[in-house]
Length: 195
Image (cartoon, rainbow, N blue to C red; front, top):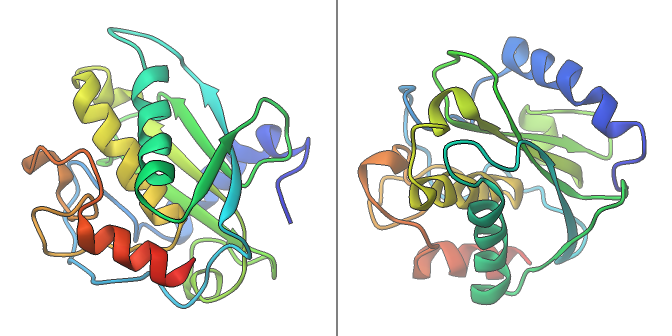
């Protein structure tokens, strides 16, 4: 099931719940153990996914171009097919806003069709939608290239990839230290094996 017209209004409340319930999918300034492979056995029911941009389009450089490039990268290098839409029937939202000094530059919030969000039940179920939060508090000072890396990383979580210890991977836990902006062969293989 895709997100409905009500989703944009509900995003902030879901975001607040995600911070209280779970902080497993962090990047940027936070610390955390590196995981490997997938978040769980779950995924979207199809490789054809609609995505939508929400929030800030520019400040101290553009957000639109890095996010568009991030989503296109997954389409151009894997079996995924992301289509950008302007309506409310989206699978993945890239949501750019100021979330404050949270310790993360980006965070992916996944909900499954059984109503579970950002927990093992969601990660092992059929995904209903994912919101990739891009935090301007940190990203306003980032280059366009680094914003693209964060967006690509969060989109990777949205298609069920976990953090890993490979510094050449877009899913490396501390993406800021690598300069990587595209999925490597392992990232692409993992996505293609799942979709």
